[in-house]
Length: 349
Image (cartoon, rainbow, N blue to C red; front, side, top):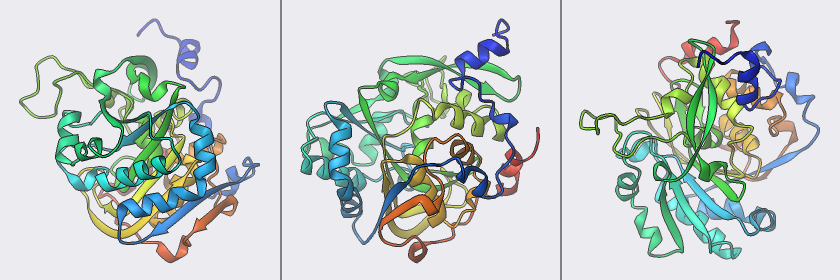
């Protein structure tokens, strides 16, 4: 890596000539709202059935989604950060609601559920969370991204300011994939909230078969996910921003039926929220979800960076809300114990 200079890094970091470290923190939406010259929308549903919430939230976008899928393969990307903690993972009922929707618009002929679970064997997680029952009911294939082809992308590390190579899932990078992020509302111990974008960006780095965080892991196996996290709060926010240019969902489904608050994404506690947010604009979906979780959006670094670069619409005044009102369904999630430490991204390095 010592052969890389600044010019090499800019070429391999996906950002071209934009250096987010030169940007000032955003105290309000006004600073980047002026750059948003287009509008967006997000659908909000509430109720007592997860599958129904997802189905109803997707329905207003039926024609738009069908056109966008075209002949592409549909990739449903759950967020299974752990393979044995149901509260941290995408619920099977949410996936079923999406599959029913795809069936209703006749786009269910080429669908996969694809994940690289952070903490263990992906297929074991599928089994623990009941995903295999979906394969008996729908024409859907279960895929472990760790066993699929990958591409090399370079990411930033705040410890040495050098680019580091990461194996990234080709399935999630493939232009012939229509990516659906099936995330869950959760607080986070590094970036305040983990929603639809983060599910795709940090689901893309793969690990060797046999890797796990337990002492029984196969010797010599490697996990590339920590590399992508950038060795710190500034590094992870920067990499999420940079990688969003190439790794992002085409459709966001955020399940807030039962969210997670506190020390997420693994060790938080449940929030009975009973909502679902859907948008073809992932930034709008994440922005609405942040608001519904009672989180100050100006403090979520990577989403502010993405908003400033026009990666989507984050100004609530320019997001048409379909269905339920945001204000009627806000629940203030308790933040991670290290909340104040996470705000270091707002200060000069």
